[in-house]
Amino acid sequence: MKKSKMICLVLTLALLCSLSACGGEGEPSPSPTAAPTESAAPSPAPTEAPGTAEFVLSCYPSAGFHPITGQNRTNLTLAPLMYEGLFELDETFAPHNVLCESHAVSEDGLTWTFTLKAAAFSDGSALTAADVVYSLQRAQGEDSVYAGRLSGVRSIREAEAGVELVLSAPNGNLPALLDIPIVKENGEAPLGTGPYVLTGEGEELSLTAVDGWWQNKALPLTSIRLCSVQGADGLIHAFDTREVSLVTADITGSNALGYSGSYEVWDYPTSIMLYVGYNTQSGPCRDSEVRRALSYGYERTAVAKSLFAQHAAAACLPVSPASPLYSQALADTLAYSPQRVEELLEGAGWLLSDGVRTKGREALTLTFVVNTDNSYKVSAAEYLTELLSREGIAVELKKLPWEDYVAALEGGEFDLYLGEVKLTADFDLTALLAPGGTLNYGAFADGETQDLLAAYLAADAAGRSEAAQALYRQIARTAPFTPICFKSWSVLTHWGKIAGLNPTQQNVFYGFSNWKPGR
Image (cartoon, rainbow, N blue to C red; front, side, top):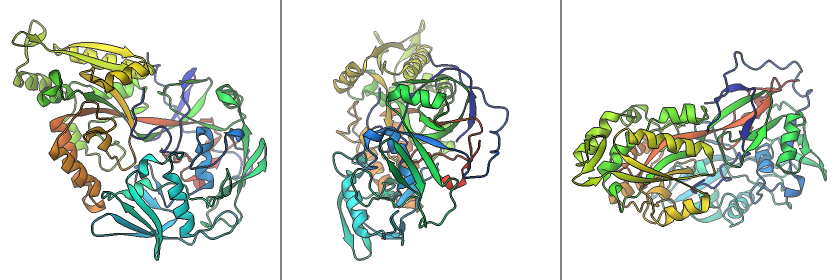
């Protein structure tokens, strides 16, 4: 999932938020450069003992450091060093207990009770159920970056056994949504239970290792200096001049920043899905057989490897290939196949004559819309358009600025659109599939699909894979949208500065106790 690369070019990179709450879960987002070459050898081993080399991270002091209501992406990236959740997610999006000792679920799947570990905040005070209730209720607020993922939680309260959450509908993978930082409220930089605490004043700030951290794990550094930056240019300068040791980036993102030089790049999977959506209510795509035919017409590997410069993973299913829910056997049956395109289109009455698909006197003509704010996505749409044209389909590609793109989707003025969505870690597809779903621009409605979606969400760990495959087979049959790939994000470090990184979408410092700072 992750890899180390050398970049000796000027790249356009975009800062991203390392926490899943930042970047709009469930919301749409708006010529690719050559792929970086793989390094011939792994990064050099550090030459200094842990704790002796200076390792510096960037921050924006004036933006505040609250891990729940803060909005500054750079500062939020630091949060996992200071705060912990009931659970944390690994690189496969699987939840693991952190502050939660155990949990129980009611028979109807609606009431979850969490018992807590004997953890302590950085000031030595004990973690309490009241702290967890406060934090999760704060995370439900409109000013919280986590509000969307908790929309299905009806109530949060203290219970005899710990903390009780009541849901509006069953979600058997609720722990995947509960990596939310737990805080002891104390202004704009509340206390956490993590390995470090924010110290210093003004622009002279550091992260200092907590004396007697409750997890009792060894840390690679006793102190991490924070370099105060102002604006994007300041961050670029700080990294390029080696004042800052690490930055996070979406190499294929919009709102690009320019870094130059030679770095190590550590890629990691995200839940950000690039997909083609269809208008299921009007035009040729109201026929599910046409949609199915089109779904076989996309060469996803070329999009992921060439157009997205290997910073994406091709996907035929609406779940990250990093997840154990991804069935390669099922995916293989849905892969690029011009033969299947032809078979399904002819079965739907669209016959090829003189290089054009027609049904009676009507030619198969489609309008494909894409947002121009991201050149990678424009290139992908151009390539997909070319592939469909080879099958005798006339495709008009409309490249629209963001506001016009959204207006076209909301007005149903499309047959196809290229979309992007950051799914929650439970890979809930409600926004795309439910009638009235925020991303259901094609007005798809199918009762069986809704039943299978509900069954998937309600399934416990033992039944989740089977429920997921049933849902994915139904999506393949009805084709309300077609997955193309899941993006990767990146951590950039200077050569030999750090070894042992294992970043995840939720936490680029995942497994920080195993990091080895170098010179």
